[in-house]
Structure formats: structure tokens, C-alpha cells
Image (tube, rainbow, N blue to C red; front, side):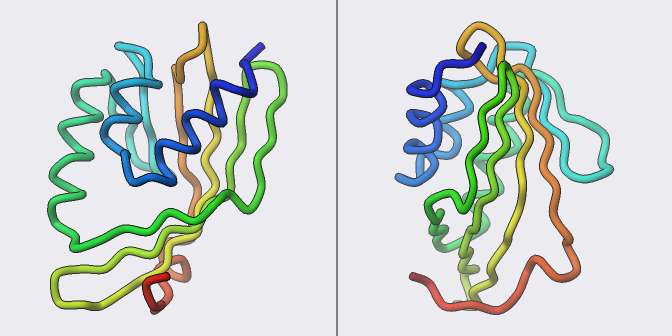
Length: 126
């Protein structure tokens, strides 16, 4: 069973903009991450090597507090909103649900669900 305090520490890392560091601190070495129907990426180092360039391509990201946070045994569901500004100043809002399977206080598997067509609605940075 995942510890609620540990999950909240993970959520706090994202809220403070430490997305790549959250992968370092909260994912197992062999963790996987999958977006919608895409093939999963596997391995913490590969996940970090994907996250860091993605963050470098944007000007800013604002992670809102979770809309919903559910913890059941080793499964965590989080509904989140991100406002992401590109280098041209255009801001888009992404709403997603992430489903995580935790083992030993770390994320073993994470899958994101979003409607990419509707999820990237124009927005203003908070």
C-alpha cells in the first residue's frame, strides 16, 4: 500500500516545477511511462532524458494543484491541469489524468490520459 505522505511529496515536487527531479526521486530505476496509446518509455534515465528536453522547449509551465487525487492500495489517480507557455508567448492548458502504480514507495508504472485534441486549450499563465 502506497503511503499518502509520499504521494503528497511527489505532488508537491510537480507543483514546485521540479518535474525532472520528481522522476529522479519518485520513480523506480526500471519504471515505465506511457501517454495515451503510445508505446511506453522504460527506465528512469530514459524518462529523465525525455523530460528534460521537453521542458527546455518551453518558456514556462505552471502546474495547478490536483483537481482530484485518489489513492487505493498501490494505485494513485491524479487529475491535473498544466498551463504551458512556449517561447513565442503562446499559452496552452493541458488537462490530464495520470494513473500510477507504486511499489516500495516509488512509481513503477505511470500512464497519462488526455484528449489531445481538446486538452490543449488556449489559456493565460496563472
